[in-house]
Image (cartoon, rainbow, N blue to C red; front, side):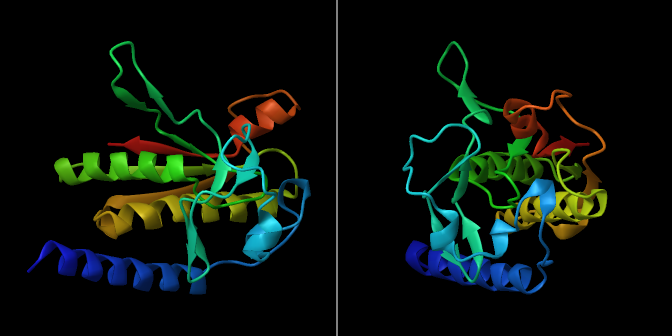
Length: 197
C-alpha cells in the first residue's frame, strides 16, 4: 500500500471518528460565565487576531471537520517549549479558551506527543482530568470539563491510542491550579491534565 493511500485511509478514519464525536457533543450554555461558543459557527468564534494572540485569545490556526476543530482554538503558548539544548519539551497539560473545548494547533501537537508515548509503552494507561475556571454553575462546569477531557481523548484515539487505555474524569471547578480571581488564574484553570500510569 502506498504512503499516499495510507494517508487517505487515515484521514477517512479520522473524519469518521470526528463525526461520531460531534454527534455525541453536549449542548449547553453559560459555562464559566459566558455563552457556549463551541456551538456557534466558526466565523463567530474567531476574532481575526491571527497567530500573534495572547493566552486565552481565539486564533484561526486550523480547520473544522464535521463540526470538530483540529488545530484551531486558543493560543496558549505554555504547553510547548524548548530546553537549554533546543529540545522540545511537553508540559502534560492542555489549556483551553474561555468556555471552549477546542484544541489549538499547539495542543494537538502536545496530545500527539503523549499519544506516541502511550503507543511506545503499551502497558501504560492515561487519565485525562478535565477542569474549568470558577465562573458558571458547578453542573455546567462539570459537563464542560468532561467535554474538554473527551476532546483530548478523541485526539489521542485519532493518533492510535485504544479507547480502553484512556480514562476521562471531570473535576469541573473543584481543583483550581490557581486560586486568584483574575484572567491569568482562570486561563491556568481551564485545562485537561494528562496523567500517564
